[in-house]
Amino acid sequence: MNRSLIAFATLAVLAITACQSSSDDARASGEKAIHDLEAQWNQDFATHDPDKISSHYADDAVLMVPGMAAINGKTAIHDAIKQMETDPAMLIVLQPSKVEVANSGDLAFSQGTYTLTETDPATKQIIKDHGSYLTTYRKGADGTWKAVRDMTTSEPPADVPATVQAH
Image (cartoon, rainbow, N blue to C red):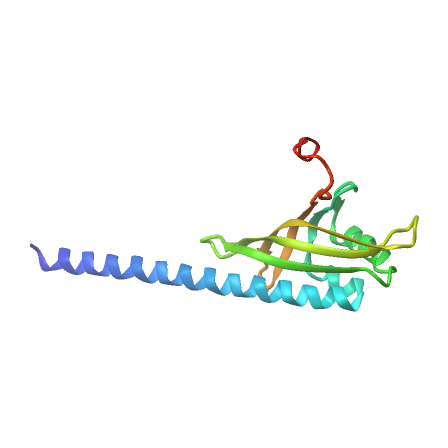
C-alpha cells in the first residue's frame, strides 16, 4: 500500500475523531449552560423582577401558556411577565428532566416540569398548578443562550375523568 494513502487515511481518521470530540464538547458545554440558565431563571422568578425574567428570552421569542394566546416577542413577553409579577404569591419553579443540544451546538431544548403558585383573582385564594414545559434555545453570536420558543401545558386536576383528560 502506498505510504501517501496510509498517511491520508490516518489524517482523515484523526480529523473525524477531532470533529466528533469537538461536537461532543460543544453539546456537553451547551447542556451545562442550559441547566445553569434554568437554575438562574428559577432564582430570577423568586425576585419578581420582570427585567431579569424576560432577559432569558430572544427578541423574537414566543411564549405559549395555557388559557392565553401566544405571546410574540420579548417586549410583549416582558409586559405579560410584569403584569403576572404584581402578584406577590407568584412563583414559578422549573425542574428540567432532559436537555439536548444539537450537533451544531447552536440549538437546544429543555424538557421538564414546572410548579406555579399564584393568587386567584376572583377568590383571592392561593392556587397551585403544575405541568410540563418545553423550551427551545438558540445560542447567540455572543455565546449566550436565549429561549426562542417556550411552551407549558398544565396537567388536569386528579378528579377530572380520564376520558376528558385525553381530549
